[in-house]
Amino acid sequence: MATSRRFSNEPAFVLHRYDWSESSLILEVFTRHQGRTALVAKGAKKPSSNFRPVLLPLQPLHLTWTQSDAGASDIHTLKGAEWVGGHIMPTGDALLAGIYLNELLLRLLARDDPHAHLFDIYADVVRVLASEHGEALEPVLRSFELQLLREIGLLPTLDVQTLTYTTLDPQHRYALVAEGGLRAATATERASLSGTQWRTLQAALDDGAHFTHLLRAVAPLAAELKPQLRTLLQYHCGSPLLRTRQFMMDMQSLSPN
Image 1 (cartoon, rainbow, N blue to C red):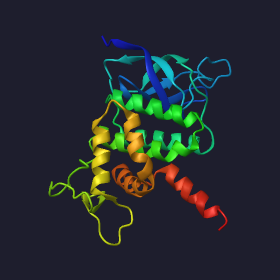
Image 2 (image 1 turned 60 degrees about the vertical axis):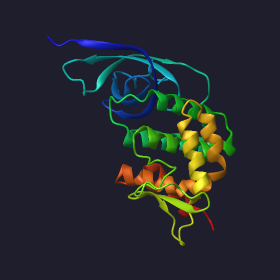
Image 3 (image 1 turned 90 degrees about the horizontal axis):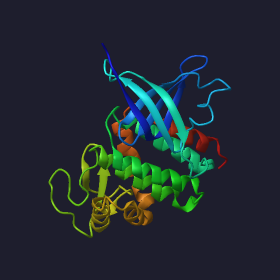
């Protein structure tokens, strides 16, 4: 006889939600101890449902669900959801940034693969997005992108050239590219950093207990990092283009010159 396991009060965030029926939702959630998980919230769309006002993205939650041992990869049944509180919903550019981060997690994280450290960083980033500190938006996004790539094994070591494993020259410029890792920049590549700057980033990443150290290291380099990290992330996400990036490109095309 099939048995089931119960996961109670698991720290979580909703990454995305889909209609499952006239009254229910399928949730893609990022949990601290179980990783990315799919849940069905039965009756969540009903006006009387306790789930209805709680199951929102970019809000810290505690979730309870049951999982059948007979089908560990199936969609599991949500039993309880509680809003933890602590901040309001991000708005404007911060909201779009949060949706972008959620899309990255959906595209790059495997199901049922825990990443507790990344979860804690994500929770910190969401708090910043909700704080309306617009000047911190770009450094926070670039820092999270670096941490995400490192956590899932897609970021090369940033203090040596990837193909030759030679130490970076402090004064030379290097570019992070999708297929070659970190290599010497060409004369036509504007998006690059000096050897000293890449090594500073590596040292900040190695200090994994302090996300603020990475944030400080990234802040003056965010503009140069952005095109390099976005290209690398899109390469690993594959087709199609990230929806949030496509949306921003469409919005920019509509803006008056």
